[in-house]
Length: 138
Image (cartoon, helix red, strand yellow):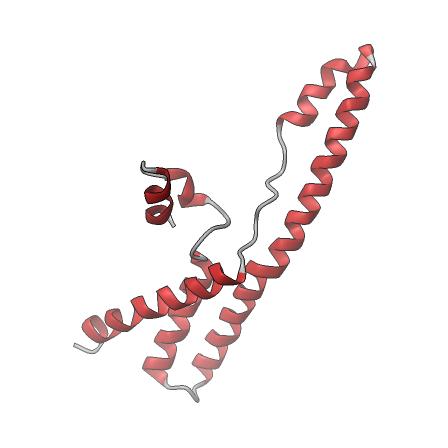
């Protein structure tokens, strides 16, 4: 994510290290990598692979859906804060509170698109294969 954003912005994008969205989905990628390692090491019909696969699907679902709903809730809360701030601005007694209401808005973009999730899966699986064959097998 840092490399892609740095290329786009033409400088080292340190803010991307802790961002909760964008391409690729880091959490989904790591979960897919662990699942791939379990498949390569223990086989498709192992309990460890089944558990890893289940967790990877749960993380992918969370990245796309649960966090999407959280973003919609954050958007509603930010809208309510803006409306309350406008009411405070109209009243001279409460005008000083309006700045604190709008100063800290919740992040609204928390989720990943399906392309970001599946791209993260694909990149980390492709990264896992040489890692496994060059370091684990040899």
